[in-house]
Amino acid sequence: MTSFKVGIQLQPQHTTMGDLREAWCAADSMGVDSIWTWDHFYPLYGAPDGAHFEGWVTLAAMAADTNNAQVGMMVTGNSYRNPELLADMARTLDHVSNGRAYLGLGAGWFERDYDEYGYEFGTAGSRLRALEESLIRIRKRLAVLNPAPVGALPILIGGGGEKVTLRITAKYADAWNTFGPPENFAHKSAVLDKWCDELGRDRSEIERTVAINAGDVDDVEAYLEAGATHLILMQGTEGPFDLGALQRLLDNRG
Image 1 (cartoon, rainbow, N blue to C red):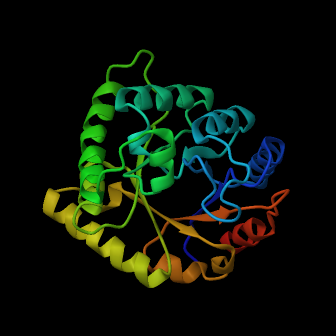
Image 2 (cartoon, rainbow, N blue to C red):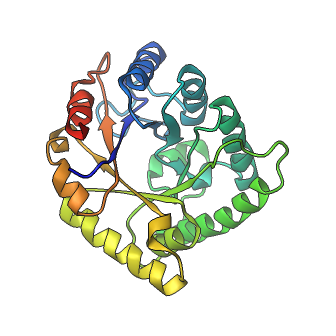
């Protein structure tokens, strides 16, 4: 089997900070390559007003608690923070983690976040335009921050929109994430390749990550054949995190 990276997204909903910290420390000790959380203000499923934590403060704690895995947001809602501020936050996170940070970004989609926190929801088109504008500003700010990031601080873009999101990914990103099933991932990856070719970008410069569920951990080969190189298990909880599926995924890596 082709070698691949293993990651886990620990969702900060319906849980406690103690359980989150225990889970990411355990995952780091198990040998995962990456650990992620998400950037929302309310649960995405289950009780809509259940317990939930803000993502970037959670991510900072993760960076401080762990020692080996890369850490990142899957993905930051672009509309929620000023781009220059976000660049500075990511650079600071990179220092907290000693160079292990990703900067994950997406256009945003969860309307409740926008409405209840006072952000303008706009349209899919306006949010995508804002994402591209932010990427330009973020890269400009990262270039002048003192001190500079200590690691590579790769920019990851999440999404599968074929006309805009994947073009933006080909132009600006170091990594890309979308969802299964394998047929969907293969199709979207091929579209990304076409955008790379059109824009003169080396296809191999963009890491291909895929977010999977526990039921997918035994379908590794299909995702690898579809072009994924980094499989990220999306892990929710209604109590302490069960990392059994993560162990199976690691075992499949060999």
